[in-house]
Length: 141
Image (cartoon, rainbow, N blue to C red; front, side, top):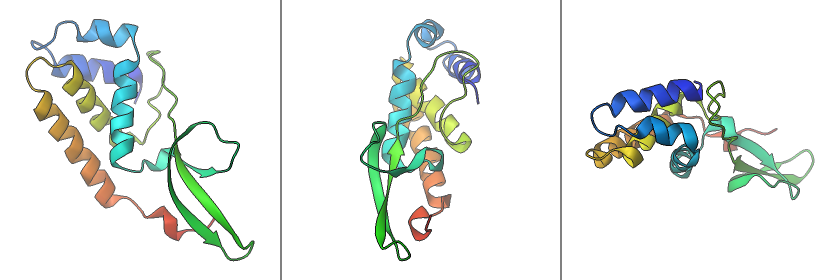
């Protein structure tokens, strides 16, 4: 999903609630960053999982380690920071299944009336994603 599609969804959901939503979303990436981080705190987006070494600077949080019997070393995994852009053609850097949660979190920040409702919808999507996701720690690289 592109940022343009996310923006249209948020503005559509907030129609009649916050007339300045489009203005906020066009000029600043804060709401997108906040929404992505809210999602990443609550689950492990497989699109953002990477192998960790000491040279990595885009670490959001470490998640687990696996032992490699062949090399007799531990492989460490982390969630990387997503690439954030408010360019209309930029793809949202998270699993496609989680983009609706990002939209609902953004709505929860911008709404004048239903912030709890939007946050609950976002959390529900994240919970479903998390319950259906694969446990990557069982796989070796």
